Length: 311
Ligand SMILES: Nc1nc2c(ncn2[C@@H]2O[C@H](COP(=O)(O)OP(=O)(O)OP(=O)(O)O)[C@@H](O)[C@H]2O)c(=O)[nH]1
Image 1 (cartoon, rainbow, N blue to C red):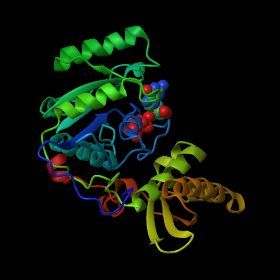
Image 2 (image 1 turned 30 degrees about the vertical axis):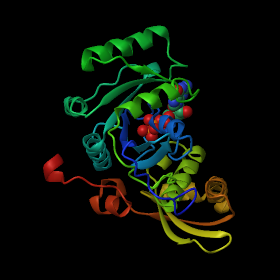
Image 3 (image 1 turned 90 degrees about the vertical axis):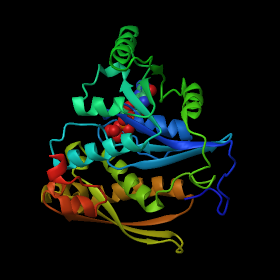
Image 4 (image 1 turned 120 degrees about the vertical axis):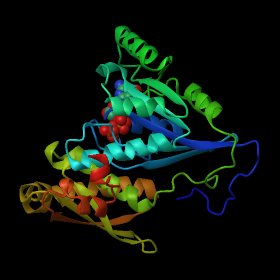
């Protein structure tokens, strides 16, 4: 998606460009930080943990520097296959990135990363520890993060508040300094290489997180089945997949009341994003245990690890 089509990619030898990965525990504020850094709402942000399941690219091009942000799933214990797919995606991202931002929620106590994850982090080409939620954390909590970062990585953490926007400009400048000299990797006006479709399903999931109790949104996957770009209003047909008939009943609600509210809320979000009227046609289907089914996970766009290799 571009702000203004047909702009040439930057080619000057003096430019810098690279991939910047955001990793950390669910709810640490990765999506919020990336949105701050690219100054555009690209990744869904909710108070519930573990909403970001796929990589989202946000691209920031300014002053001869292009940062391609990769927002990773939370690094969680691989209890479900879905979690293993998430962990796998996160480790791939750390390997690929020019700069890794390890985000810690300073107000929440220190995360305990597994030895595998810690080893991966120390192998990163360039690592920055970000102590987020500076606005919320007590002085003693900030000190705990400082000590942890020094002991684990020999690094002073960057203290920021993704919510309040403090420390963001300094952090952006530091990331820029650490990127390699390179032509731009994407056309200068790209804000994301992900298709609009992807954001549509993210907005539907975000609306579900806002409307329903925890249990239901975690079992949701959204797939856009039809996207008529040239219609006015823009016509989008999407299916919400759940795991159980009871969840389907909750989403539809009495006389269809719940799905109507969900549709309205998601439509407003999509309209704001695409900047025009949208007709959103939502369907609900039950696929039992889709979160544990590699084929279904792949169908919904998750990259699934080879179970032999990553068990
Ligand atoms: N007070 C405060 N809240 C923050 C800050 N950054 C993020 N939050 C809040 O923390 C919650 C989680 O933020 P997200 O950006 O969704 O976190 P995430 O790490 O992307 O979460 P996952 O998608 O679950 O991996 C949201 O309610 C944010 O508003 C911050 O600097 N200060």
